Amino acid sequence: MIVEVEYADLISLLGKSVPLQDIVNALDMFGTPVDEYDETTLRVEVFPNRPDMLGPEGISRSLKGVLGIETGLPQWKMSSSELEIDVTSTTIRPHLSFATVTGVKLTESAVKSLMQMQEKLHIGMGRNRAKFSIGIYDMDRIRFPVKYTEMPLKDISFMPLDAPTGEELTGQEVLTQTEKGRDFAHLLPKNPRKAPVMVDAMDRVISMPPILNADFCKVTSSTTNLLIDSTGTAPGTDRMVALIATALAERGGTINVVMPGPLFLPGRMKLDMKYIHKLTGLELNRSEVAELLKRMRFGFLDEVLIPPYRTDIMNQIDLAEDLAIAYGYQNFTHELPRMGLVGKPLKVSEFENTLRCLMVGNGFLEVKLFNLISKVDALLAGGAKVETANPKSLECSVLRPSLLPGLFGLLRSNKSADYPQRIFEIGEIFAPGQGRCLAGFITHAKAGFTEVKGVVDAIQDLTGKTAEQPTWKAGEHPMFMPGRTAISEWGVYGELLPVLSQKIGMPVAGFELRLETDL
Image 1 (tube, rainbow, N blue to C red):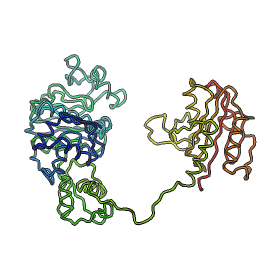
Image 2 (cartoon, one colour):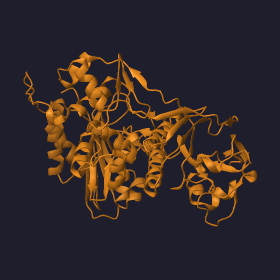
Image 3 (cartoon, helix red, strand yellow):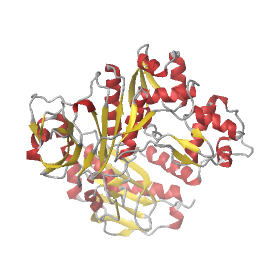
Image 4 (cartoon, rainbow, N blue to C red):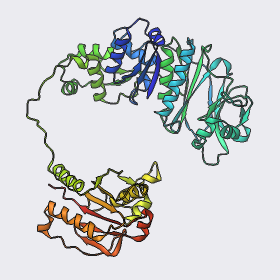
């Protein structure tokens, strides 16, 4: 994801003037390269493993450590909150978490960055709000206690954030008349009668998660005290709240712990020095390791103390990566391996490359298609053998039992292209007793059995199958014409059924041959 950061805002957060080029170089070492920049703005590419760096607050926090401005665990002002959150059971988004941050110094730039981080988290960790969503509110405009519950859509009434009409809307109108409502209505149950809501002590709707917040409590540059919530369909909402709250704490805010919500305590992990040495090759003692970890904003006692915003630290390899970053990749000495590691192609790869040369020499074009196809396409080859449990798309719900349906679909999509067309693919199929195959189609006004037989005979000569003499005999196949189909233990070739050829608009002949993989 590309995150836009204002250089002046970043310098303000660092608390020290740092040359722009030094910042660019440091961010490259983090694996968050600067896509482009000028004297006012940096466009930083942040990968999903570092959601804490989706805003200038997290970027400045990391830079402080590696540049030596501030090391070790970040020290935030913390307190417990006496604010009450009344949670009523809800089946739509049952997981939720809260926190408040007070005394924040916001600017227009800071508000813009906060909203940017919120949306980037929605897209990444939140799976476009389906798994988690985040709400951020001006706490001073809300009367506590706050209640989280479900309400009938007809009973929900509030003025949504940046409402197009400037009037209050019912829950149903929010779903149909606002842009966010139309975009995210599918996250509620089909034909919903109820929706989750947050209401304050004056019975005002604060938000309708995960759709839209109310306008009266929106965050502006004059906001100093903020309420943060995250609702979701799975555990993990506390991580979302922790990411936003700790970012705001970098702007001088005090984090107030609310229940239910994160405790903001550091995680703990034992450090395996032998593993670190084996992986990085660095001869470091524990005190040197401790200093490097502190530059990456970890604490170190008997164990590594992991700040709550580092949701990417899962095992020793993650610690090793951070140690290497702190040490500096440019400082590693280059060393040749002690054993001969000259690579060479596998025999099967050489064999397949030879086949490719033959096919191209015969006027074929190689294509690479997806391993997943639809159930309808799988039926062309006799039906599905391996189905996925929860397919993202019905077009990608079955592991292909043959290469032929995919190649046929490609011809059908390109029937307006010039003829003749000759395509082939070498790839894996997923059927009992099968592995890698070579398949192809020929289509033009006179394509037929004789032409495709010539191609198969040429492949047979190249592979040595002539000596083995596979027994070709008339047979049946779901995609080929009876009487125009040859089958053996090696594969099948023939003319496509007329009902299928009609979808191309031309006669089609094809083949599929099983390749030996134990070369």
